[in-house]
Length: 299
Image 1 (cartoon, rainbow, N blue to C red):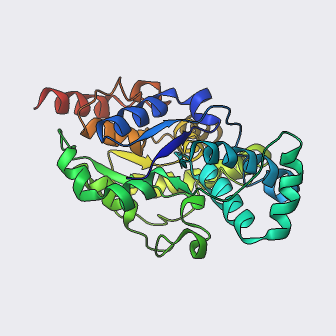
Image 2: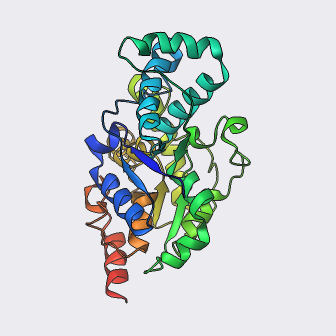
């Protein structure tokens, strides 16, 4: 199996350490060869940075890529934005001799050079392609039986011609990973809509951003799910902490628990809610907590 270096990004270490712990526990339990990536910086964020200053975006992303090249390990991301930024930069630098040469001029000032010898992987894509739902099913110790609303997020599947993960209108791979935990992925209206966080929306147009999230949450609520599962900490923050902000801004309460996929997978692999950081999420739903407690007790 491929050797990996874990690229944590910014949000997870600073706001969601539970996701980091869940990821490390899952990787170890599945016997995946993954180590830390010393010296990594922000990816940098693709929605804004790339749009305003492409050469600096390529230089910063290129530096991160050279860290993986030195270790001879592909980068494993657990964030859609980090995946989008690093995968796109990696592809761009591999394909364009002109941009590669210019970027390496910048990197040369810190004695680095992009060679194009590694790939960038996303945790959901990697688990689906290299591990597979069947192997995950075999590793599950506690089939969850949860009704789940899967949120893919934008950068994971778009641009579809570059991601190579099938249809961006009706993808299935993430749903299959969720169902490998013994959960049920419920369909809901506007499933593939953006959560409203990316592209600077959450920072620059907060009310509009929350309105987009509120619309999606309303559709999820209609489906009668136990929780939302994502694979991106920025989407996670928008759908988790965003619910508190939506209640304050629009007087609408949803109280839907939000989990990163590695938190869901960690539960199915036998780790407790505390071990995978469920208690650190903004939304604490008593009914959901009781359901997880009953699962652990085997009821």
